[in-house]
Image (cartoon, rainbow, N blue to C red; front, side, top):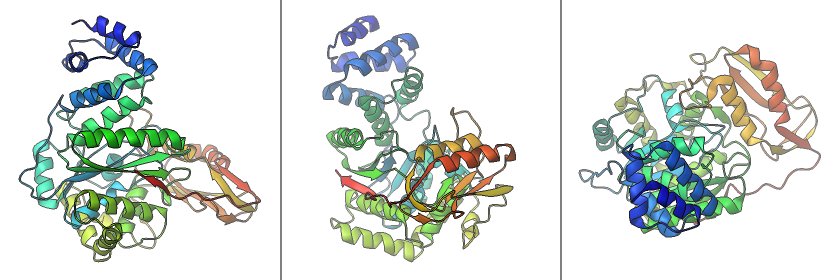
Length: 437
């Protein structure tokens, strides 16, 4: 079997067999097939499509290119959540301790910020000392002790995905649904989970802007995960404005702690509760959604979920005193030197927010990264005073900005103001959760 023959077959719209895809993925993972040949295969697949059978085989091969964890020593179901990425999305920091406090196990392997969307690992690393680079042995020990653990992808987990993702980025083949499905699920299923809840986002702050595209991805993800024997639910959620009030790393971590301390109003808390409740159903705690929501609220109100978060901070080397900083006013002094505001230039209603631009402003001010090797300024953050549908008057606050680099202040104020559409009539507000699959 030769790579060039399989590239030719795919170029000519042929369907590759299980053995042919296995040959390509195993050979590339072992460095036996060079980047230029795999790049040709990626582009041929991107242009000509992949069948369900090819997609399933690709997933299986990527999943088994490394270690697939087992947690037989933990007698409760293991569940996780995956989000396709959004601005202000810090739900993982809430749902992991909530679901663990409800009696399930949450082995969570997360990612970093890239482009305009934030990353769970960067939010966690805003906590002084918090380690996301645990070995698999350390990961399993924390998981057994706390009922949850939150780390980044290790070398042993889906190494084929790590190599292929970098090549997909360089060959402009990232937004291809079969590749997205195989990439997401190879990492998540390698965690050793029994069930998975997916948060598939659509809108101007999501990678999938159109609802129909997001729905097709959600269907493919759920079908593929279920075919692998995993109980799976997907929520299609609106990302046409930042989730919650804060965008940034340290500030989003603090907003998550605020929810764990019992502040349950607003869209961020609403989505966190719903995702957690769906995880309880997937994990078999209950079959009744109303009962699941009730249990989620109960562990938050009793401080059991906050105690779980404190426990995992300590277990992963972090300083739990961050929990005490979160009160009526966040203590941002350890992170940022300066603050400024953006006021509305007119009276009316917030009709639109360019959510991706809000994310890029944080990124360009040092709070995100263009490449995975870029450093992060954890203190950069925006507080979203005005959200969709809010009435504003001339001079009212739209956004409060926190930063360390004063040289970009005027530019960023201009960009924030341009990201807001203010009009005479209020907009139609779409539901946060549009559909559940």
